[in-house]
Amino acid sequence: MNERNYEELLNINTTEKQKGFHPSFHYHRYEPTPYLALQKLLESYELKSSDRVVDFGCGKGRLNFFLHYEVKATVVGIEMDETFYQKALDNREHYFEKYKAFPKNLSFISCLAEEYDIHPLDNRFYFFNPFTVQIFRNVIDNILLSVEQSYRHIELILYYPSADYLFFLENHPSFELKVEVPLPSYEQNMNERIVVYQLTY
Image (tube, rainbow, N blue to C red; front, side, top):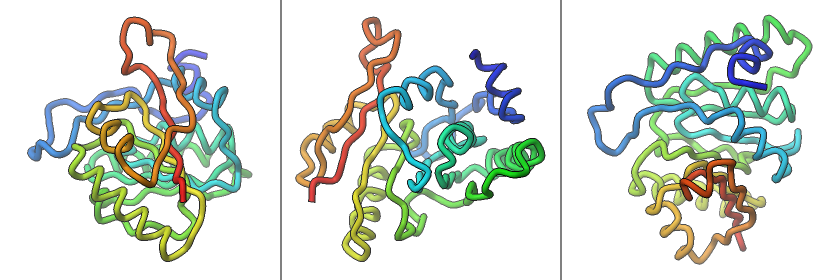
């Protein structure tokens, strides 16, 4: 299905990209993950209804609605931009108007990523380069602290991974590469891929 078909299926509107830039260079401009990439993710990587997925920099919630519809996983969107947060809430209302019988385990939180209080059941974390590696490190530290308090298996899902993110994870003693999903334009652009890192302890 193309972008419009998915938007109609989910009864949401997530297509518009962010205009301009955030005042802080640490936060990157929002752009939704292509539906094709999300399809390829589920073809190569197993997500279950028992998973609790956190999407950092969720924007209007495209990933959240896609995973909730396809997998019925619990999905939490973290968004610092108030305008996008409100649009995500609007999309949630429209989504559940169409799918009234679906479990309501889909939520959005308005806060900075590094200030999000990691839930003891959060076990999958999604990043589409929402911020610089400095903030990424802080978020990973928060995740690891949460695991120390409530142990569970953790996996990080990165779309279009930045070199800084990859360098950090490749040299981190607690993570190893689990899955790499090349996307159709990978031969022209090696960033067009999804990588999954798993916690190793």
